[in-house]
Length: 385
Image (cartoon, rainbow, N blue to C red; front, side, top):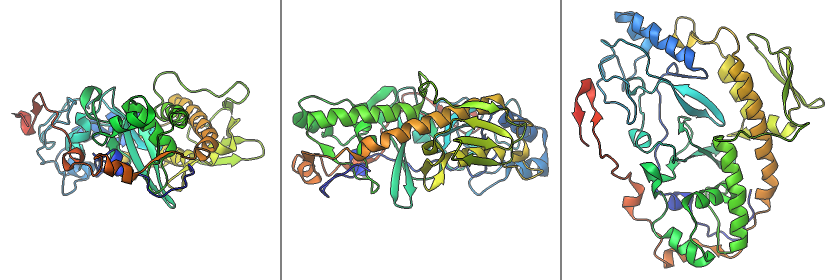
């Protein structure tokens, strides 16, 4: 992790003060690695009646077939109680379901125990969500343009309002950094620095050294681009790009890595070259590639909606696997640069207190009022919140 020689670095919780608990689905079947299976699960639920529908739904205290809830902000799913609901599945939405694992979710408030509407209200093309991932030796950060549904640590949006308005940064922080650095940093630059410099205890050493700041921000933007994976797709140089060397089976059951040959085996299928750093890449003490594979090969309990899954391995999963290997390998290559990011000319907590940036006002820890339109409430009623 980034080296520091002081212990007065500000907390991430003070630099990005507004945070939200991660969404809690309450049932597994509304989410999964492929959208077609989710639609098939919904159709199966809609065709069932009475006790059969209730058993398939898997009710919890927060959600039953009789629960009345409003629409998720920005979504067009129904609000009729599910006991009487019919019709097509709401269009599945891409989400970050696990570290570096993009999956799908049926964006229907009636299916989700704790959806965290305040996150949905600020989710748009400008937003970047920062998710904390507790680890055995501390915590790591993930950044994503997708709504994060991974149940790990707090979620901190970069912006408090839609459209990239009002950064979720300590009031006065940007101006204070500008005075130290000689230029006004943009909110994404502060996020980039944070990704590059954050420590396992979720403190973020800041610097007033313009050259060091520039190098850290450049490194963080590279990390941010790899994590978000939007726009141009990342590629390894020729000769290092992973390819399918032997066709993947219709339903692979095992995953094995050959260090000597740098080959990933999915039963008799083979992908190579796969750098050891990609195979060994862990988040939260779990290998990312193993977790990704398990999410796509674990059989659901017979008779439940999770048992509805692809009959054969989709081609899209192979493409996603090759890209994931690439992303992990490129991120691993950045670790030495992070380790060398020793902060000089630190901007300490004491300094931020003296400048009035800290302590953060309590209002900055609460969501902004972003509603300038009506959201559909339970049973089709509208309410202006």
